[in-house]
Length: 109
Image (cartoon, rainbow, N blue to C red; front, side, top):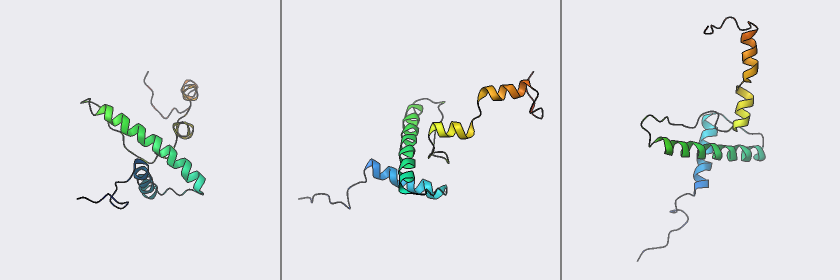
């Protein structure tokens, strides 16, 4: 007759697995948050990004030419934060080229 599983032998829940991955990710990328509220917010963003990565990779695995996504240093940022921080508005970029700014860069004719 078997024994009922106890807490120590039960496999971790999805939330617990995500939290462990988040803790590993923060350590690997040197992320330190000023308070538990910010840490909780970043964890929620991390979970959404992890879900997106997992779902996208599942779809791509069926395609021979599909690419794979993975966690990187941006996994704690929302898409809006990433856009605001790292992407310039397209109009500004085009205006610079038209005005001759950034002449050090070669642009196709």
